[in-house]
Image (cartoon, rainbow, N blue to C red; front, side, top):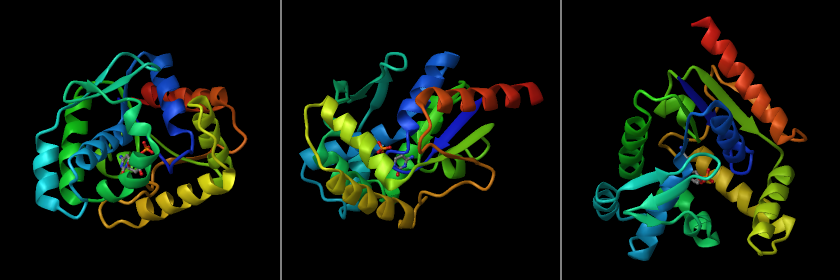
Length: 222
Ligand code: DC
């Protein structure tokens, strides 16, 4: 049983997906964290996103794993806990360029399918319902206004002790949305059979209950 949650940056996917996985006691798979980990490693090694062959070798030689249970899931890259580092501003600003590269996507999609094989999973990203698990039993496409998403990002940064203006965050979000939605390989798009969920003004509890209800109604139909 797979619950696929897609949507743009800051639409509420991560917190909702984690809470749904915790509530149902099933695996949580954050695919954005995998693209972020590869971006971090490539930047550390000064490999530009334009160098396909070096990126191919890098992604094939990298082991990404998840440890813990939602909501406390840690991201391990080659055994190193990179959970905080992959959320840095630098990685966030560069990830859209690295994740658009075919060799990176092919390798990570294969790993995502392997991690989820045979398990009940809540998987979140941009192409989960369209490419990674097109047969997912529940597909959700989350959205929210750019301003609401920037406000949520501002709170996340505040929690890390960083002050950012709404204008700067809105600008960053718009740039990332544009890159993620217009790339040629698996762009961010709503699957035709996904349920659209505008989370503007919704509480986390409302979002979780909505998805859990879809999960149970889809299980009883089977
Ligand atoms: O969800 P996030 O912000 O952690 O994702 C980081 C980047 O990874 C985002 O800019 C788009 C990309 N991504 C993707 O292309 N495909 C996915 N399945 C998940 C994330």
